[in-house]
Image 1 (cartoon, helix red, strand yellow):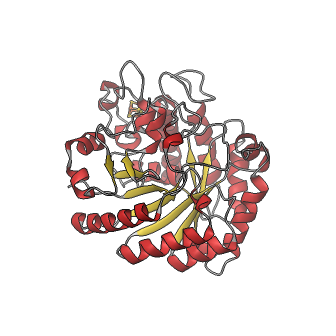
Image 2 (cartoon, rainbow, N blue to C red; image 1 turned 90 degrees about the vertical axis):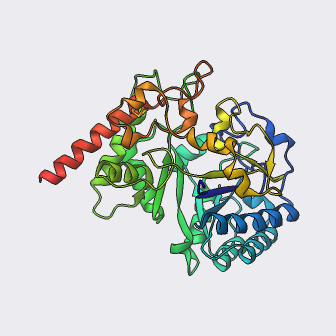
Length: 371
Ligand code: SF4
């Protein structure tokens, strides 16, 4: 049986920010409009019951991530009740996390996270001149100061250092990577996850001039230089994963390497979909049949639909299968392989960037191991 590692639970289908790169609201998929604004109590309860059974059936714990939209739009007291209910239903080995834009991170929410052992990850793109360029609220107002205040509030809690899992940054190529690294280090976060801007073979990611250009690879290479120059670096998931893979280890998250990850997304009405990022690949996030939290999740995971989705993580393009960097790159995220003409049968749109970054990493590792 395929093991599920991560379940993204959309407590809210709307967001209080209007980010210019959002794959949910800005990529032409309006399915969110048909979803209830908030997940109901009945749906949370059915989710908890069924996930508890799935964890027993697969014999492995998983992580449940409150997502959105913006999950904290449910409000502090309802968020607390949801965490309490799921903690009551799920085995203690199940990790609970919230991925938030940070605007509604008040003391009540932070206390709930501490009480129910919920890790907090906050989206932040860098200093205000970068972050506010892309992440205004729905009235066009800046959000940076409020997010920074939220981070400070989490860190001020007695359990703050363990509550803050990390920050999530979508790359702006116009930002200087070394300054961005210094900025994130100054926030006190233990880690940062850098994401490439979304795109595919039909719509190139912003900042990428052609399939052969290497803007993202060069940017990440300069970030790597700043990271390697720091004696006490913060964790950078993508760089750490890729360097571990180069050294013969394993990755811990999707997008690089050859390990498969089991990911389910639960919409606010309880419908189960595939990985959310596939929305930007012509709505490929939907299963052919409707599954929901009221169905047997172990049966869904064992179904041919799910197996097909799971296998789609592996690249099929001839260029990837013959690629000397396949073990490290893994063909990238499926959504980045998509084109209308060949569906997912392409290398990643970031192929040239990945090769550039991998070469730079190898050089740096060789330099340091020879020293
Ligand atoms: S996307 Fe490019 S670098 Fe990655 S495995 Fe495929 S061919 Fe290799």
